[in-house]
Length: 211
Image 1 (cartoon, rainbow, N blue to C red):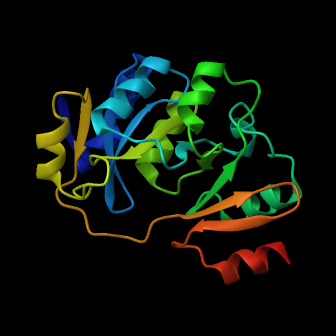
Image 2 (image 1 turned 45 degrees about the horizontal axis):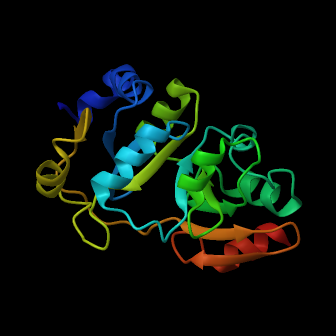
């Protein structure tokens, strides 16, 4: 496992992307927690990520994209008025949109990404490093907190090293991270929306954006 400091990471985005492109897993700090990142189109990489976390698939998979256009290859509903208004107002930012999967996705990838929820969560990140990785990779990336299922520790550098050193190709070590509010998850349909998880973006802000 290669390890870069947070200060070094900006100069090693190419190394991070190379690892993802090769089907590997990387780990970077994003909004108060370490996140494991994989190629969202690689069945093997997605499976490796899930196995490393002992993941139970009871939450929507989070995929970071460069913009709403890039999300079209993963999800339907990018043309809906609600989707477009929310993306325009809050992307890049801390609002995650849960949308139905696109029929363009390979069936096995669709199954891995949706599982019990039936949706895929997409967001354009405001984090500089995550944004740089997505832009350089030029493809959507699957992101998941660096902790075992239902276990804490995603903000602890020691916990990440202990649990994932054998499964990661590259880790950006920023030390222990201060907690931040999670992104707000909103499930969108053609005619409505609902908050799945409250977070950094308030319901009032969403209602204002859609007024």
